[in-house]
Image (cartoon, rainbow over all chains, first blue to last red; front, top):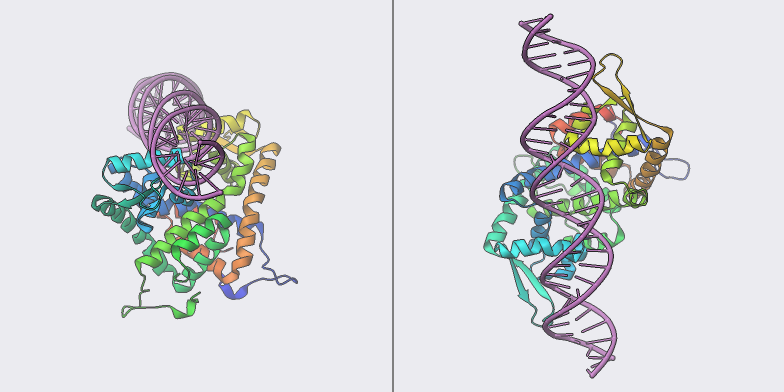
Length: 170
Length: 170
DNA sequence: AATAATATGTCAGTGTTGTTGACATTCCAA
DNA sequence: TTGGAATGTCAACAACACTGACATATTATT
């Protein structure tokens, strides 16, 4: 496998990238994303939930007390779509929905103990694969991995990402 | 941003990875994948196609003459699901469906000129973002990016990936 | 030659997740 | 008091996945 050393740059100092190299990256994203979701998906089918429920649980866990609107723009779906998911999670006692104190229109979302439990189970499954991949690839690869992913994000979503990851942990 | 230099390894020589670091990677995958599909998606809605059509076109372009069964296991969907997509693509004159010579049960799939044209348009949109991200991140980051993604794949899908990318282009 | 297995296609039904559009409620702010 | 923002809900719809059942060639096996 060609190491980072033989970086090919053209006269303008830009990386020279063939369509083949780019296609390879595209396919890597496709196949890797399937692995990325495979483990939590297995847990979700048991509980009769879907990937949307996982995403909601994840980001509520990540920002306890977040509002519906904030979650909406993080997930990038319509409120109707999110509401369907939230309704079941609240109904099943996994998510808490509290009227705002300052602004009573807002609903602050947080996880119940049961919600935290499921979120943990899903996250553990996903992190296990992530950890294995990270260790297999090494620290420098992980750094590159995050760098490229960040460069692929839409600026609007990048904001949410930066806010959540809060700077420089890698 | 912490560089690859300060890799933290424990007494066993393994990377020390906090849950925070792993969560960051998980969120990077989530947000980046949305950027990854955003550009082709915009073209697809115009043509009234979906992501599934894009995937089919991509992998047929990648392996012209491939069989339905092979495409099936590459995409990891059921034949009913793939068939729905293929039917429209063949009906719209984007994909060619030819009876096998050696084995007449098989159907060999390939793109027509019109199919190649759409596939190119979709791929160009996706590659543009990929190229920009690659250049922004640099050659070493790209190498790490691919390495981690490959380590995240299910072994079964990794086989398809290896077969398609054929070894060591990066 | 009869039978089994393979490759493909199709029909019907179902579920998740996304979309629009419309409408009601509550509440903050000018 | 009025306008607009935040939220919730209803209905309808579409894309895309699934299962299960069944049909049709074709090839492989016995």
